[in-house]
Length: 113
Length: 112
Image (cartoon, rainbow over all chains, first blue to last red; front, top):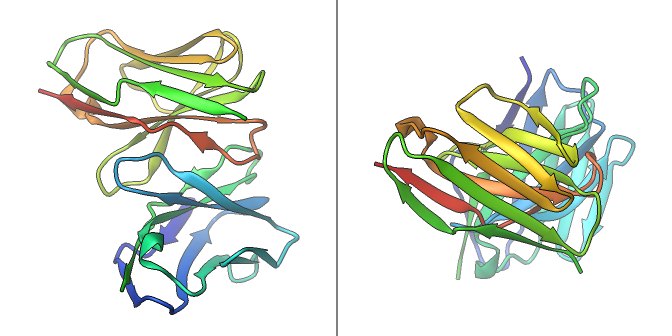
């Protein structure tokens, strides 16, 4: 069955360091992958979209990679700040004829001052 | 710019009571609309989506239903709530299915 795996354990890092979050998937052939940020009690906010023919996408301090051979996406936040603390969700779509994304459970990021 | 409104923010209902959650989108036309449920520590579960007025696709069989009476209005309903219906309900819109989704701030539903 299709599976999206994000680390269920929170990632704790020091301010100023680079945070790297992982999204692994099995039995998927996604046409695209998205990353969202979710704060407690709020809806997710879209951050970045990367398509299957793209290796890397950047937006300000954010960088996403997409390796369809490894079936993995990495999400990096450089020069992390306490305000970056949130849960980050990956979502895969375009697999098996379904264009609607399927979301992972998310990984909590805690940036310590 | 586009905005999405979802209400109420919090709702406490007794078992067996009806439910109506409303979501409206402003600033765009003919959006794709979605209802999700997020249980504590779980991922987003797609409940319903709609690509147009009166067109509803159900992803998970349950005692919930959805309707789209107007282009930018999406309603989630139930005739009789169950304890298992508790959760965080999110409405979202996108231009196309493979485009980014934009979420409302959700409704925290507690069933007593």
